[in-house]
Length: 222
Image 1: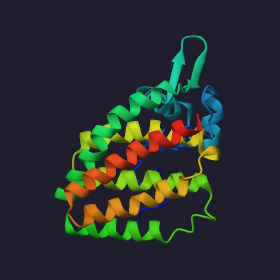
Image 2: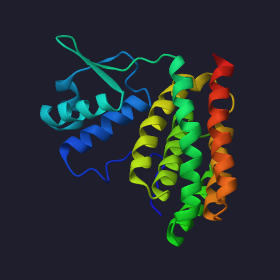
Image 3: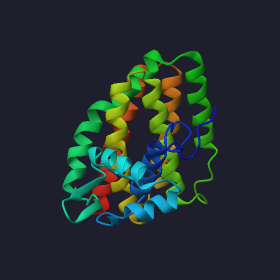
Protein backbone atom coordinates (compact mmCIF):
# COMPACT_ATOMS: atom_id res chain seq x y z
CA UNK A 1 0.00 0.00 0.00
CA UNK A 2 1.32 3.46 -0.87
CA UNK A 3 -0.99 5.83 1.01
CA UNK A 4 1.16 8.70 2.25
CA UNK A 5 0.53 10.92 5.27
CA UNK A 6 -0.75 13.46 2.77
CA UNK A 7 -2.83 11.95 0.02
CA UNK A 8 -2.73 15.15 -2.00
CA UNK A 9 0.49 14.36 -3.82
CA UNK A 10 0.92 14.76 -7.55
CA UNK A 11 1.22 11.09 -8.48
CA UNK A 12 -2.16 11.17 -10.22
CA UNK A 13 -1.57 14.49 -11.96
CA UNK A 14 -1.35 14.00 -15.71
CA UNK A 15 -0.77 17.57 -16.88
CA UNK A 16 0.95 20.74 -15.73
CA UNK A 17 -2.44 22.21 -14.90
CA UNK A 18 -3.25 19.15 -12.75
CA UNK A 19 0.08 19.47 -10.95
CA UNK A 20 -0.52 23.15 -10.31
CA UNK A 21 -4.05 22.44 -9.10
CA UNK A 22 -2.94 19.82 -6.58
CA UNK A 23 -0.05 21.91 -5.28
CA UNK A 24 -2.05 25.11 -4.85
CA UNK A 25 -4.99 23.20 -3.37
CA UNK A 26 -2.67 21.72 -0.75
CA UNK A 27 -1.40 25.17 0.23
CA UNK A 28 -4.95 26.48 0.51
CA UNK A 29 -6.26 23.54 2.54
CA UNK A 30 -3.36 23.53 4.99
CA UNK A 31 -3.49 27.35 5.25
CA UNK A 32 0.00 27.91 3.87
CA UNK A 33 -2.04 30.38 1.85
CA UNK A 34 -4.23 32.09 4.43
CA UNK A 35 -7.89 33.08 3.95
CA UNK A 36 -8.05 36.38 2.09
CA UNK A 37 -4.47 36.21 0.78
CA UNK A 38 -3.97 37.30 -2.83
CA UNK A 39 -2.72 34.72 -5.32
CA UNK A 40 -0.22 36.01 -7.84
CA UNK A 41 -0.04 34.04 -11.11
CA UNK A 42 3.61 34.84 -11.76
CA UNK A 43 4.74 34.05 -8.23
CA UNK A 44 2.88 30.73 -8.16
CA UNK A 45 4.19 29.79 -11.60
CA UNK A 46 7.75 30.46 -10.44
CA UNK A 47 7.30 28.51 -7.20
CA UNK A 48 5.79 25.51 -8.99
CA UNK A 49 8.08 25.54 -12.01
CA UNK A 50 5.24 25.79 -14.52
CA UNK A 51 3.90 28.49 -16.84
CA UNK A 52 1.18 31.00 -16.07
CA UNK A 53 -1.38 29.16 -18.22
CA UNK A 54 -1.43 25.98 -16.06
CA UNK A 55 -1.65 28.17 -12.95
CA UNK A 56 -4.59 30.09 -14.37
CA UNK A 57 -6.34 26.83 -15.30
CA UNK A 58 -5.73 25.54 -11.77
CA UNK A 59 -7.14 28.69 -10.20
CA UNK A 60 -10.29 28.36 -12.29
CA UNK A 61 -10.81 24.84 -10.93
CA UNK A 62 -10.10 26.00 -7.40
CA UNK A 63 -12.71 28.71 -7.78
CA UNK A 64 -15.22 25.97 -8.55
CA UNK A 65 -14.06 24.22 -5.36
CA UNK A 66 -14.81 27.41 -3.38
CA UNK A 67 -11.18 27.62 -2.31
CA UNK A 68 -10.44 30.82 -4.23
CA UNK A 69 -12.51 33.74 -5.46
CA UNK A 70 -11.77 36.08 -8.37
CA UNK A 71 -12.81 39.71 -8.73
CA UNK A 72 -12.66 41.69 -11.99
CA UNK A 73 -9.70 44.10 -12.00
CA UNK A 74 -8.76 43.10 -8.44
CA UNK A 75 -7.38 39.59 -8.86
CA UNK A 76 -7.76 36.20 -7.21
CA UNK A 77 -7.80 35.60 -3.46
CA UNK A 78 -7.99 32.65 -1.09
CA UNK A 79 -11.60 32.34 0.00
CA UNK A 80 -12.36 33.82 3.38
CA UNK A 81 -13.85 31.72 6.13
CA UNK A 82 -17.06 32.41 8.01
CA UNK A 83 -17.76 30.18 10.99
CA UNK A 84 -21.35 29.93 9.74
CA UNK A 85 -19.90 27.76 6.97
CA UNK A 86 -19.16 25.09 9.57
CA UNK A 87 -22.85 24.26 10.05
CA UNK A 88 -23.49 24.20 6.30
CA UNK A 89 -20.53 21.94 5.58
CA UNK A 90 -21.32 19.62 8.50
CA UNK A 91 -24.94 19.33 7.37
CA UNK A 92 -23.72 17.83 4.11
CA UNK A 93 -20.91 15.72 5.53
CA UNK A 94 -23.06 14.14 8.25
CA UNK A 95 -25.22 12.68 5.47
CA UNK A 96 -22.53 11.73 2.94
CA UNK A 97 -19.59 10.56 5.08
CA UNK A 98 -21.63 7.70 6.64
CA UNK A 99 -22.89 6.79 3.16
CA UNK A 100 -19.34 6.57 1.83
CA UNK A 101 -18.24 4.47 4.81
CA UNK A 102 -21.21 2.14 4.35
CA UNK A 103 -20.60 1.75 0.63
CA UNK A 104 -16.91 1.13 1.21
CA UNK A 105 -17.75 -1.64 3.68
CA UNK A 106 -20.16 -3.18 1.19
CA UNK A 107 -18.11 -2.79 -1.99
CA UNK A 108 -14.39 -2.70 -1.26
CA UNK A 109 -12.49 -5.55 -2.87
CA UNK A 110 -10.30 -7.85 -0.80
CA UNK A 111 -7.14 -5.94 -1.72
CA UNK A 112 -8.86 -2.67 -0.88
CA UNK A 113 -9.91 -3.98 2.52
CA UNK A 114 -6.34 -5.12 3.19
CA UNK A 115 -5.10 -1.64 2.32
CA UNK A 116 -7.56 -0.10 4.77
CA UNK A 117 -6.41 -2.50 7.49
CA UNK A 118 -2.81 -1.51 6.82
CA UNK A 119 -3.72 2.18 6.99
CA UNK A 120 -5.49 1.56 10.33
CA UNK A 121 -2.32 -0.03 11.68
CA UNK A 122 -0.23 2.92 10.51
CA UNK A 123 -2.60 5.32 12.25
CA UNK A 124 -2.37 3.30 15.48
CA UNK A 125 1.42 3.28 15.25
CA UNK A 126 1.67 7.06 14.94
CA UNK A 127 3.44 8.74 17.81
CA UNK A 128 0.82 11.46 18.06
CA UNK A 129 2.57 13.19 20.95
CA UNK A 130 5.58 13.99 18.79
CA UNK A 131 3.86 14.32 15.41
CA UNK A 132 3.32 17.85 14.17
CA UNK A 133 -0.36 18.76 14.23
CA UNK A 134 -0.32 19.80 10.61
CA UNK A 135 1.08 16.39 9.72
CA UNK A 136 -1.73 14.77 11.71
CA UNK A 137 -4.20 16.64 9.54
CA UNK A 138 -2.46 15.26 6.49
CA UNK A 139 -3.07 11.76 7.83
CA UNK A 140 -6.69 12.76 8.36
CA UNK A 141 -6.96 13.76 4.71
CA UNK A 142 -5.30 10.53 3.59
CA UNK A 143 -7.78 8.40 5.53
CA UNK A 144 -10.80 10.19 4.15
CA UNK A 145 -9.51 9.92 0.58
CA UNK A 146 -8.94 6.19 1.01
CA UNK A 147 -12.51 5.66 2.23
CA UNK A 148 -13.99 7.75 -0.58
CA UNK A 149 -12.12 5.70 -3.17
CA UNK A 150 -13.17 2.44 -1.56
CA UNK A 151 -16.83 3.47 -1.79
CA UNK A 152 -16.61 2.97 -5.55
CA UNK A 153 -18.72 5.97 -6.55
CA UNK A 154 -16.64 8.64 -8.32
CA UNK A 155 -19.39 11.25 -8.08
CA UNK A 156 -19.76 10.75 -4.34
CA UNK A 157 -15.96 10.84 -4.05
CA UNK A 158 -15.75 14.18 -5.88
CA UNK A 159 -18.39 15.79 -3.68
CA UNK A 160 -16.86 14.51 -0.46
CA UNK A 161 -13.34 15.60 -1.39
CA UNK A 162 -14.63 19.12 -1.96
CA UNK A 163 -16.38 19.33 1.41
CA UNK A 164 -13.62 17.55 3.30
CA UNK A 165 -11.19 20.14 1.90
CA UNK A 166 -13.39 22.94 3.19
CA UNK A 167 -13.81 21.26 6.57
CA UNK A 168 -10.06 20.74 6.88
CA UNK A 169 -9.42 24.45 6.26
CA UNK A 170 -11.69 25.25 9.20
CA UNK A 171 -10.00 22.63 11.36
CA UNK A 172 -6.55 24.02 10.50
CA UNK A 173 -7.69 27.53 11.39
CA UNK A 174 -8.29 26.40 14.98
CA UNK A 175 -5.63 23.70 15.11
CA UNK A 176 -3.49 25.32 17.79
CA UNK A 177 -6.50 25.69 20.09
CA UNK A 178 -7.86 22.15 19.75
CA UNK A 179 -6.82 19.81 22.58
CA UNK A 180 -8.03 16.58 20.96
CA UNK A 181 -6.48 16.52 17.48
CA UNK A 182 -4.74 13.23 18.26
CA UNK A 183 -8.02 11.65 19.36
CA UNK A 184 -9.75 12.91 16.22
CA UNK A 185 -7.11 11.30 14.01
CA UNK A 186 -6.99 8.17 16.15
CA UNK A 187 -10.72 7.61 15.64
CA UNK A 188 -9.97 6.65 12.07
CA UNK A 189 -8.44 3.31 13.03
CA UNK A 190 -11.74 1.88 14.30
CA UNK A 191 -13.58 3.25 11.28
CA UNK A 192 -11.09 1.74 8.83
CA UNK A 193 -11.24 -1.63 10.59
CA UNK A 194 -15.05 -1.63 10.52
CA UNK A 195 -14.96 -1.05 6.77
CA UNK A 196 -12.32 -3.74 6.28
CA UNK A 197 -14.46 -6.15 8.32
CA UNK A 198 -17.45 -5.33 6.07
CA UNK A 199 -19.42 -4.11 9.09
CA UNK A 200 -21.45 -1.51 7.22
CA UNK A 201 -23.67 -0.52 10.16
CA UNK A 202 -20.71 0.13 12.47
CA UNK A 203 -18.84 1.99 9.73
CA UNK A 204 -21.90 4.17 9.15
CA UNK A 205 -22.21 4.96 12.88
CA UNK A 206 -18.52 5.70 13.37
CA UNK A 207 -18.36 7.99 10.35
CA UNK A 208 -21.36 9.96 11.61
CA UNK A 209 -19.88 10.26 15.11
CA UNK A 210 -16.62 11.45 13.60
CA UNK A 211 -18.26 14.29 11.66
CA UNK A 212 -20.41 15.35 14.61
CA UNK A 213 -17.37 15.24 16.89
CA UNK A 214 -15.43 17.43 14.46
CA UNK A 215 -18.10 20.15 14.58
CA UNK A 216 -18.41 19.92 18.37
CA UNK A 217 -14.64 20.22 18.82
CA UNK A 218 -14.53 23.39 16.72
CA UNK A 219 -17.51 24.97 18.44
CA UNK A 220 -15.98 24.28 21.85
CA UNK A 221 -13.07 26.63 21.11
CA UNK A 222 -14.91 29.39 19.24
